[in-house]
Length: 545
Image (tube, rainbow, N blue to C red):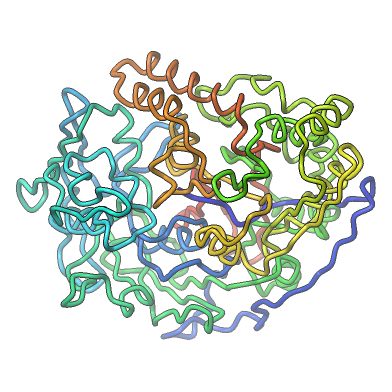
């Protein structure tokens, strides 16, 4: 999964009388130079990654952005949202159950050794094995033999390798799934499916800390030095000379600058101490277009912003009518038009309009109806006080306070926004089941399929290792998604996914609030800045101005 850190762009909030505080730390070092040379790097803002830089344990946007520069995926996506081979030469199947992946020749690890099919098998088995506790484990649940290596909580694995993975030769991996899944090729652009070199592992068979601090990939950039999480404010990279794909034309150094304040990052962008900022803050948006001109970007996005509900960990929210009332009390239209200056759209489905399967107006409870909301909330005996948790490093303060104002006014209850300094803080608190309030959550797709809005966030199997932070579980929902997965006809599969979506709309395990757009800015020092379908920068397209 790819949970999102940032609101990415938030507008001035005069109508809702919300104040903006430019607080928090961040890197503001005037740019400097990257390690290993005098060239000034291209510099991008990120939040601190939640974990060390191990692909199979990176399921959030900040670490994924770094790893997307270091690794090349098996597939990317074209303008029609269809998978196209990148590190793969071909990916074929005759029955959607047995898949043959042939690797494109010429790829080498950053230490110069060739990339082989064994490197993919090794990484995928490592991710799936239960005792390794990798956050992406659930994505391998369709591979034959997954239940042997990952039988579930309280059970002991009976194998360390999935029988569905077979190395045919150095350049060919055969993958047998436990059941047909037509979306398998589409999945393979996700971070979890990156390979790992043999050198990543220690004698105990686990990925070493040294590797997590300085991963060796097979992509466009290599790390120049280890990244010490929690200490370093920059991640330094340079172009890997032997990379077989497209490279930047007139620059070779890249620097990710770690910030805890989006406002500080925007100040650095304006001061030309930062080149790319993809999460512009509320204090900036009113003047961002005028200040940046054609360096301000507004593009389609397939992400969704939610209010999350800790169903498994707080019985106060068990009654669906409470969740429905909260949803109806939120004035999405005003929030998207005022807080976000029209750069968001009110959410009315769990599937984003950019992906097939979306149905306009599908969510009746997403329609603003304060009178009915209060009546329903009182009859359902909803809690008198609510807490709204959010990460303060992503520009969320304004819209969360707007939601809080809606709930206070329309439900007659006390609502307290609770900021977490960093995105990793709220994720860690949710992972540990320590936080029991409502929480801000965003979803940026891993791959362009309606299934990706369902399984990783709301599937029962995603509670343990996926992105199901609320602990929602519904057997009928799981069964419908499984039917969609196994359908060989895309139209039939879509029908089952929409039926599963209908269950979410009825039960509201999360409350959809808005559909994103990508709004970002760049300095005068770079041009041709573009984001791909996964909201990651297309580095090879960028030129220094």
